[in-house]
Amino acid sequence: MANQMAIEKYEEIINGNQIDCEFDIMPNYIYSKENEFKIFKEVEAAKRLGLPAEYTKETTLPFAVKAAVRFNHQAQFHPLKFLDAIANKLTIYEHTRVTEVRDDGTILTDQGSVKAKSTVIATHYPFINVPGYYFFKLHQERYYLSALEGCYSKHKASLDGMYLDADPQGYSLRNYKDYVIFGAVNHRSGEYKPKDAYQRIEDAARRYYPEAKIKYIWSNQDCMTPDSIPYIGRYSASTPNLYVATGFNMWGMSTSMVSAMIISDMITGKKNEYRKVFYPRRLMLSGSRKLLQSAGIITNSLISEHLKIPRDNLKDIKVGQAGIVNRSGQKYGVYRESEDRYYYISTKCPHLGCSLEWNQNELTWDCPCHGSRFDYRGRLINNPAMRDVFDACQRKKK
Ligand code: FES
Image 1 (cartoon, helix red, strand yellow):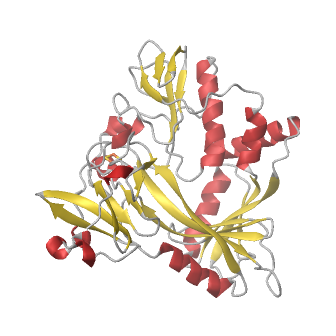
Image 2: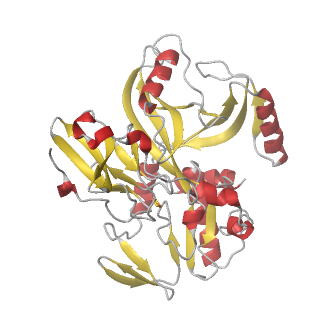
Image 3: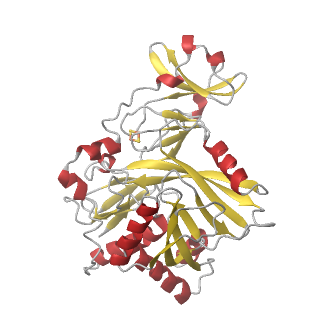
């Protein structure tokens, strides 16, 4: 219901301000290729909540499904065009890194300090470890996608909406202009498998759209909560004027609007019926083991034996790949860029010290605990880590 309310809010803002951001109302489908009963139960649950859901076996997908839930009156839009229009009315200080948030509302940055009555941490992964302890109750996942061109040249009907498989390893499909945005393959950030995510996408795309060309490929990263419900509200019990919005579980467009509505109501002292649902401390109060496992704190984060290079001979690393070598009793991650160029990194994550894993799909070093990522030279790509693992000048030749 909260997400449905968010879609209506977008519609109101976009129409009210005449924002040209390709906002289109269309159905969203959750389908299953295997489990009709699961879909049936989803439809029943959605209807009980008053959501616009229908059971169907009819889709415009290029493969057969057992069943699908069709949610009417959903929407897609161009988020950057929307943000551009919104940002025009605001004063935004870019390239200003916050280094500390104090209890009295003082915020230190690398450009100076500011004082605020209320502060919202909306930094994807919250960067303050204590209080809040979000590193106990969030992990990150990567999802791989492509844009296919030329899908509809002959026999295939265009997609009539947005499609998601109920199975997290299944396919997602939607149109954008003449492209089909085709997604597949999901894994926890920092898991080294699968190594062939883009090949799998290509194989599936060839099967369902043999005439199409893959025009673009990319992957994204999302903060996930153990109960699949975002954290929106007060950052911690001891920080009454500090708020957080995170853990959107891949539903960032609608959940960011939900966050804006809840947090602005909290700051202005209005009631909001969804506040309790997204209460950020709910899982800490139950103190479950699952919570700790999910955050990776008690995972076996030992250095990856599968990357270990026998005899520590750098020449055994293939060009375009990485390995782990021992130098003077210390383990290093090494990426071989060309015949004689290697980049060394420390595999200890600067966030809380877990061991980084190599991601062959993206040529990055990723942290399995909370999802910090670094390029093969060791430069920071994703928080919660706040610095590089090694600086680029650490490259060595053998
Ligand atoms: S991201 Fe937390 S230890 Fe690496």
